[in-house]
Image (tube, rainbow, N blue to C red; front, side, top):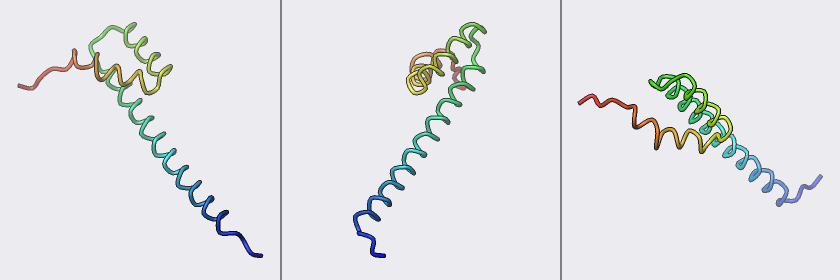
Length: 80
C-alpha cells in the first residue's frame, strides 16, 4: 500500500523530538543528582540540607540552579 511521504516525515520528526526530550530529561536528572550530592556533602546543618533537597525536588531546575549559583559558592574552599 502506498504511504504518503508527509506521514513518514512527521514520524521521523517526532522520533527526533523524543530523542531531544529524553536527552534534556537525562541532563535535568544529572543536574538534580549533582545538586543533591553537593547539598549532602556541604557543611550546613541537617535541617538546612533537608530544606534545600526538598526545594530541589519541588523545583527540579530552579532549586539546583539556586544552590549552585548562590549557596554552594559560600561553602567552597579554595585550594590556593
